[in-house]
Length: 413
Image (cartoon, rainbow, N blue to C red; front, side, top):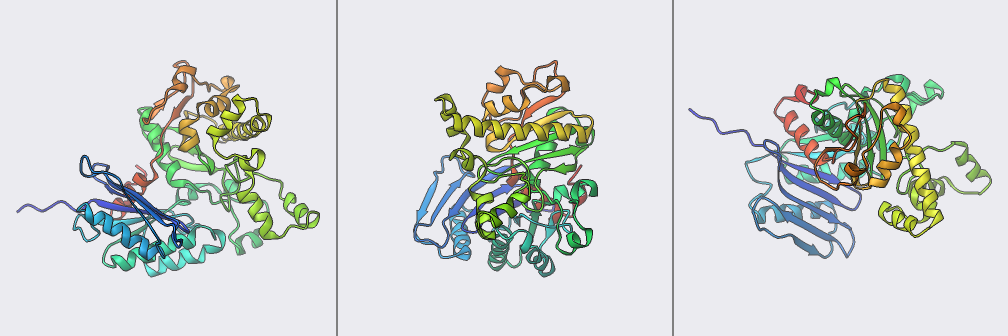
């Protein structure tokens, strides 16, 4: 008697406050069957863009018009998938995987969502007020559509829960910190996990044998120090504001700046929050947060753009050096995400001057544009420098598939 294979399709949902990004993947062969985005939810100008990939020659479809809420958005997604024969009622759909930004210390692995799990995600809203509420909305909406289907939360913070207390603790009163859950949690963990593992594969080694500094450089940016496949430090902290200079976020800042702005400039807490999260970083320094535009302005002699770039790179280089010291031995530095994968001048500038540490970039290899993981360091360099395109959706699909098939123990192998 033959048994049919277990269902292996995973719908990955990334629910934002006014958007839903989604991908339908087959976890057995990593095939993408459909990708899409619903944006401007709750507005008259809502838009759904759906690209079917399961059938050769199928064309991208677009809908415009009001989408009232996340429930309406997911119903529209389900309709688009059904049109391609990939509906949510398909017996081949194994689970829905949800990106959840903050899992605190409790959630160290992907987790099947129960009422208790959802309640804990809600309790974490005060430390992730911009993200967890939207993630919760997406979960509840998906549960209503398919209450019989496993729903799995994959947490951005989970990969960083292995940090030692010496890296995770802030030097403030312990009782106060514990009472209010104040510590370094880190974010972009799904990307850091995927990229560190893929970097080890690129070197032909097991992740347990490799020490990697991962630089996730997008509009949000973070660095991590990964020893033998395990995160030991990361640049983002209690929130995604700490660390590197980002598109609109300041990154590291003297905390007294906040007191100064309140006392001397008369700014409210909300105004300071908006300044540091939305009006700082590259956009605060030069008015642009698109690295391509900043490089164009530099080429035209724009000194403000040049200074913004130099500040960005200076902070990046500081973290590279710091994490080299934390790890003691570095086998690879991996660049990923939009800027990391595409901005050769950023990679070149970040590595420049580190030759004494065994880190160097080959100019010709660095200039090559490719969607494939690749080494861009010269053959003589002691430390490999790699460009590794991230794939958070694939990582979420793999982790979701593993947990619903009872294979959680294999996730970090």
